[in-house]
Length: 88
Image 1: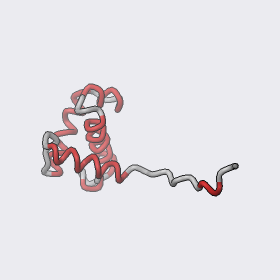
Image 2: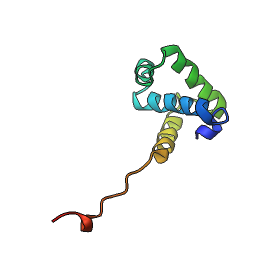
Image 3: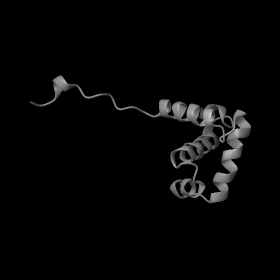
Image 4: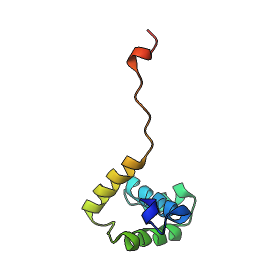
């Protein structure tokens, strides 16, 4: 996803971080800013930038669901433990 955000790189990753936080905090911009250690205005800039780059609206419920799924799919997963290899 961040590859399509501003050509990828650090800028795209920062926008993605703000969008992820926006969804995870129930759209509380101050919490996103606090968690990312940036100013509220920085988050307020990044969210519309995401919408501009993707042509979507973060206010649309369908977009929020699709983004949540896409972001979850990008998270590294821990392989399941092998029950046969566990101690008795």
